[in-house]
Image 1 (cartoon, each protein chain N blue to C red):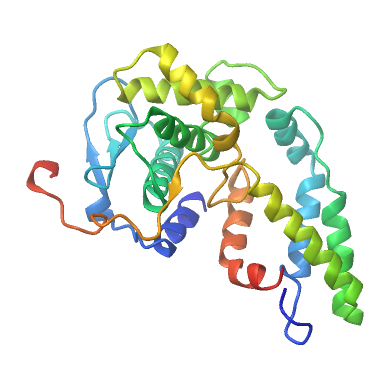
Image 2: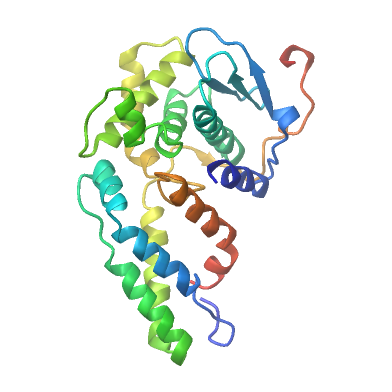
Length: 104
Length: 183
């Protein structure tokens, strides 16, 4: 987490509002049920929106901490499954090479 | 927005995409819509089997997901069927192949968790279209890697159910420097 002097919310407050609105929409309920078989949980987006606005108005340290914890939890949740393959350190060597005659 | 995000993500990973170098329009056998050839780093679009602009958008997205996987990971396309299965699961999951609307058009009716059934079934079909292996082996590979690969949403960060989700995903990708430096 960056030091308090230069820190700002990871997303603009309007983004938290847009995500909350999308999460609460009927369309998202349908998509979520179609994928996961249960209703979506949208409360965290609302909490994050409140924290974001709190930080913007009062530069609240509690709001900053709450936002950081929430976003770190999202990142952890996205990374909890072990990848099937090894990630590269650099792109494939032949990506930009011209096509061989047989491939034209 | 699906394709824009994939192209940006690939450029960020060192695989800038050139239409002339990395795409080829060809006539294909059967009803295959497209493919990714890792040996030549080329996406093949089957001009005789793509039915509409919407279908083309989805095929390009699907194949770019394979290209993205090839760019960011050591995918053993030809020697490890689990790797192939993983990329096919991701492509079916993230390209819109298994949207509710597309499944209804295919007369596959199901709602609760049907998306996962569709992703599994289409991944198996895709593997069988490109590898001379038995359905049992394809199914086993898909089932072994399903949990991990179904939940790998890179570079979208979410399952993009429609253009709105894809636009939000692209917005998040463009914001990633601010995001990771402030959590």
